[in-house]
Length: 200
Length: 325
Image (cartoon, rainbow over the protein chains, first blue to last red):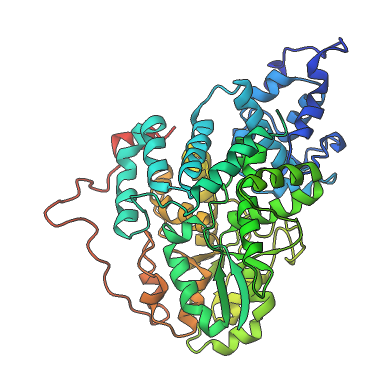
């Protein structure tokens, strides 16, 4: 038994009313395309293809087995979806066409809503990025980087200063945000989309 | 002239300005007529989908709806950034594959008076258009300063050849299109084994040690093959490999100096366009030593710091350097 497997304490739920039994359906329903998670044959091609597998709590294969077994808490507190770099190597190699990268996106959102993922660095980065986009309609790298680094990597700042200055000096970093013309239209669309969220 | 709808994406206005400038410089000789989508918004990168699904796709949907409204001749929407390209293609693809997503996105769009029927536009990456529509023969005819003697590593990254919904690339992992384009420009192209491996994506922001290792692998491999520079097709890849190269060097105690340039910049050079019009000089790892190999001389870059302020750094590791995690 590996160290990873030992950390999974939950037993397979017996009760038919147990909401975790429907976990796989829930994940599939909240995924953009047809997830095909139930088609996984546990071959492990995904983990073997993954450039960041070494930093993951569970390989994708293992995570999919956990989803099917209804291990909601363990799945949503795993760092695996947050370590996914969206390279799509596993997606094109998967013999069963599971939409692996999209499932990882789904799990991130579910983990945030369930408040189960403990390290806030990655969720904060995504949220800050989204805040900027919702306010301006464009990404705003300068604001994003300063806010994110001050909060999560203050010790990295001295080492990063030359790069930041270099980018500024070469006019590759806009200090002020740029807003789209019809930001009101975008805000209206996004507000309506939030009410319509599929997973809720 | 061939007409296209054009979605530049946020990076083209800032961090990837050299990509934008060089594209603008080569579009006329190539006969590319790019009609920018008016009032486009950010595609959400790889961040919005990790927060919530319907808003993320509605954000992309607004771009598709606007682009379709503004169609004059061409229904092909071209994006130069890999992440933008994939997001646009994905929304178009998944709105059809999962009708409930399509319905909800359209319900949200209708709040802003917009609508998009999936499949009404063809979404393509700039490189695909140049290779498959304009063609390598036409490109080769424009070459008057072949890049003879320049050894280049063709680096495509992830999101152009994968997942590739429309099957436009020769292979998901080792496509040869970029190699052939660079050969047509007269460059010496290495058979780069990591040409579609990951640049680290947003990991530079959330798990630096993961990103640094991915960046190191790519640069190390290109260096082993004695490449003079690496050629990218994506603003994110360029940013990670160029701007984070110094931090990666400090992390691993290496000293790589691998310039990272856009394919459009090299096309411009081969077409005989002045290097300054092509955004050269904006890379953080100086491309000038590589360019002198093909007889291109660029003026010294302007001093990096204002006068009178001497940088404190001596080049030795700083106490904070190791604390990246």
